Structures are given as C-alpha cells and as structure tokens.
Length: 433
Image 1 (tube, rainbow, N blue to C red):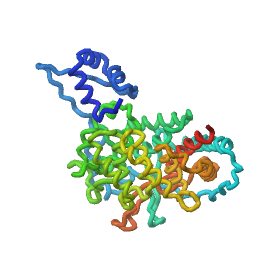
Image 2 (tube, one colour):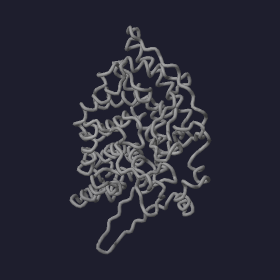
Image 3 (tube, rainbow, N blue to C red):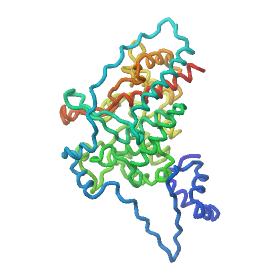
Image 4 (cartoon, rainbow, N blue to C red):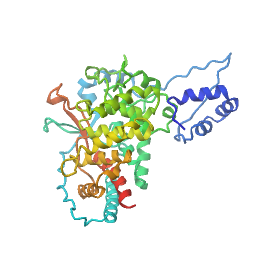
C-alpha cells in the first residue's frame, strides 16, 4: 500500500464514505487506525476521535509549548547569549583522538570471506558495546561541535535530536538485540523532544528545520502525530517557487538567527523530505531537481551543510529505499557516481565515507560492484580496541562567509561508529552468504 502523504485526510475521507469504518474509528480509534494502515502505534500516546454534529462543535487546542515564555524570548537572541548557548551545548569535549594506523589490506586473498564475516560480526558486537557506553540515560546520542579552521577554539559536546535520529536510522540495519534496545531508548528520547505538530530543532536557539524534522519523523514513524501527517501541511508550505524544500521553517515568532543564511534548497534536506513524504506529486519537483543535479554531475558546492558528495548520495539512496519508486531513474547513475569517488587503489577518502558509500551501494542493489572483502578489511582494521571508529567530519557549515569563526563542523566517534556498523552489517551478510 502506498504511503498516504496525509493520513488524517485519508481517515476523514474513509469515514465519510464508510459508516462502518466511521463507527469503528469512534469506538476504538487506535485499533481502527492500526488496521487501516497496517501499523502499530507507539504506546503511551492516547488517540481520541470526536464527531461534530449540526449542534455540536469541537475546538482542539494544540499542546502547550515545551518552552516557557521567558525561554522563547531568550531563544530569539540565543545566538548572542552565552548563557542560553550553554544550555544548548554541554560539557567541553576532549581533544580528538588520532585514528588507528591504516590497516594493511590483504592482496593475496589470505582472508577468506568466511573469516572476514566472523571478524565483522565481532567488530559489530564490540562497536555496539562502545555505543551503549556513550548514549545517555535518556537515549540521546552525543555529537561534538568543533571549528574546522581553528583547532584552538574549544570543542563542545551536543545532543541534538538530529544526530540521534541519524544514528538510529543507521542501526536499524542491525538485528542484534542490543541495537534494537538502543534504538528503542532513542525513539523514546525523540518522542520526548517533538514539538507540535511534529517538528524538531537542531539547537534551542534555532528555528525548526526540515533536516531534523524529517529524519526524526522517519525514526519515530509510529508516533500518532507523524503517522497521521500532522506536520505535512507546514512541510509542504516550506517550498520555494520551484517546488524545492527549504531548510529552515521560519515564522514571525520563531528565532531569527537563521534568516541571514537561510538555505533555499539543500540536496540532502530535499532527499530526506522525499524519504519521509514518499513518492507523490508534492515531491515531484524536488525529485526532478535531485535527478538533474546528480545526472549532470553538478553537486559540487550545492550543499552548505554536507561537505562530502558521498553524503548526498547516501541520503538520496535512503530516499530511494523508503519512498520507492521515487528517484528510481537514478539507480545506475548513482552507482557510477559512487564508484567514481574511489582513488586509484579502489579506496574511498576515509572510513566514514567508506561506510556511507557501502551502505549507499547496498541501497541501490550495487554492492557487488565493489570488492566486499577489501572494504570489510578496511572497516575491521580501522576499529579501535574500545570498539569505536574515529571521529570525522560528518556535517557542518564550511562556507567562508563568516570567516574562520563560521567554519563549524560536527562529528563524533559515536556517529562514525553507527555508520560503520551499518556498513559492516551489509558486508557481513554478503561475505557470510
């Protein structure tokens, strides 16, 4: 069944045409909705359905804001308020640890696929143990904010919902019980940070953004607000004249700190919107825009927030899987583009890019086009003794508009490790087949 772009409208339409369904929806809303869409709604969230009549009118008030009036005022000037920023950031982060020495890749085929599959499963086990030690008691993942131009600028831990959603979506590929348990805790955390009618912010002093909102929505798709598409109308309103989705959701009473550098269209953000909304006319222009840029090879400089082209490919292939048949025409082109990122030794630039490339190729059914053993050896050999993979730049504003101060990067050992576990999971299944 094709995912409806707005499930609430579908329920209203069905109830208007089918009196039996209308009665079931009124008597037991949760059961009727679950049966209609073939889903299980998140526990702990009540669902009520009211029926208006000619003599009875219902007014539904939205939830109270999670930020008080004073906090909302502070948020509007948060970028200039050190005290408010301290609430957004957390403890200073330690210096970056150097990666392990680059492993020597077997040239003579001494490592058999079976041996590598076994080693890969052990790496995944150790990696999950490391991640368990880094996720906080609420299920939040941490990231590190740092300056890519000046290493002397202090590094800080941060816990934006965006990072938690990104890592949960990566770990969904792993069928280990510990991965499932971590994902469950993190989904609870994401549900606790949602703002009506289904939006998220990266920082409290920033407005809602579609990157955070769509990834978090994908991660907790069983939340009633998300399942019923409560956030869809506002997402659809946030398009430019060409039908592409804009990053920031700016409103009159929202923080204005993002207005000065608002991104009119980012390829990763648009890919994430397509992944969430699905293959519908409302995402058609965004799909065609992505197809044109990738097909023409004109992605260079197209994203302010994602410096590596492989990240755009990774997000695009995730959208292809989740919004099938969206972007299907890109399948052969993407395979060529991803393989073209390798050097003359057949290797990608770093271990994070390797992980994203492996998962992207898996998503489009082209994983057999690379040497799975070689990539597995690199991933296995790059893991530290404590089960982590090195911190690398995952995303961030690298434009020079604000000078060295504005060159902010984000990444962490946890982020790299989650994506490496996703890639190893894909490779182990091939090697162990």
